[in-house]
View 1 (cartoon, one colour):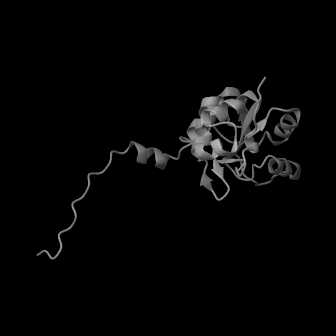
View 2 (tube, rainbow, N blue to C red):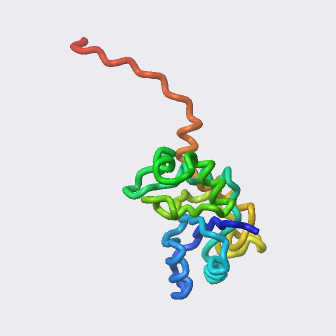
View 3 (cartoon, rainbow, N blue to C red):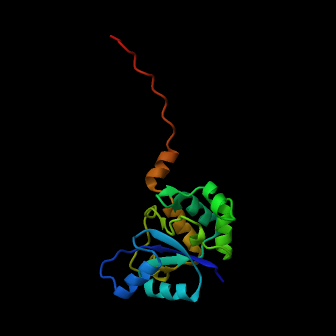
Length: 181
């Protein structure tokens, strides 16, 4: 049995039922490509059934969750979450230790002081399967189990960041000469 679900909103607000809108608000999923980590309780499962046509969810592994927290975790003031902040304010010193505790169900991500309780992700690299059908029918919505790890991997970095990281460093240019002819 899972201790925590990672939930990602994939669809917008057009023609949204008020009950579904409230449910998404309670889960803090106010925009497309926002993700949250919530405990796997009966309350969470009920909210997921109401919002299943707008979100996808599954059980994340500790390695992927640590990468998401490191890349997309933010503190108040929209500053990146650092391991120094974790060491100062939680019993967990590293992103990996925090992710292990969250996956095990012994710690909640929302309990980190001054943390923004959601992750703003990039659109999925190479797109999604379709945001109008469930995973069972070849789409992207609904419960996807451990396949959420692949989707999170596609959404952590933007295509531009990937291109910049893969591009070799440009050679240094020589400084222009002063007073030259």
